[in-house]
Length: 322
Image (cartoon, rainbow, N blue to C red; front, top):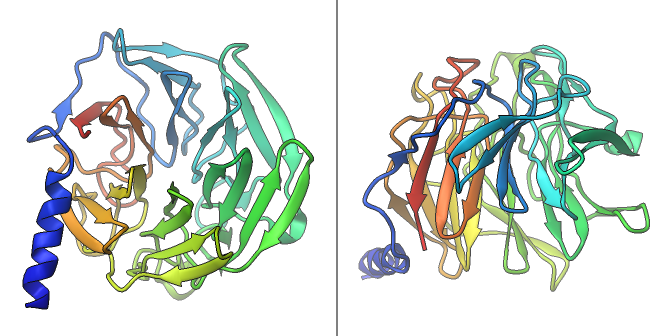
């Protein structure tokens, strides 16, 4: 009876939104640069691909004209980060620089202003909270950093949770998450911050991809406490990207030891019930990139087609999801 009820709830969640039957590969007027371990983020109605293993310029995508535009070169190599849009600018926080497996955390924020087409160096991250491959999100004009790893893909994954106030420059250490993870995305759903997917990268013991994290943790800002939901992510993977709409959290992209190809599964969590359902699979599995939810559509661009470092992608897929 309980199993039947969960199926009904999952079906109800699946039907809650109008959506396309499949992802569509968007035909653009020109091509973007291939990249992976980058971010893809919306700012003031346009989408930005930035960062990645190779030094690529910032590229701006206009969803109205379906056109890419090359912008400023990057000030340094940076990758493995979750970019955020804040106050009409794009913030790169908790990123790595350098090569595998001992990538180094970047000690400062990097801030890009799309209107000025300029980069500037932002505030310094406290040395005792410095790490890369961090989950980052914005809530009430404050920036939050969750988990990550200190020494590239080698070792040093952490449970840290921090708050930064851009208006005052104050850095606050918050309660640690229940478990460490890296190569994931953090997402705000209502007034709860969800950490889903990821792994504990451990090249030091020869397990870079192996230690995926099945549990879903969330921080409740009302009670200032962490919790773990009863259900686990259906497809364990790292290098994931998340978007939210209402009580629903979509987890997509990723890599794992289960298969050489990057994951194409798109899975949706109803945060009210803890039940999972599936959305249409991507045409092209990918990992190491971001996703944008804009005007009732999910957009994903770039990433790696296989686990590890390639081949790099430069196309965009879109799914209507309202």
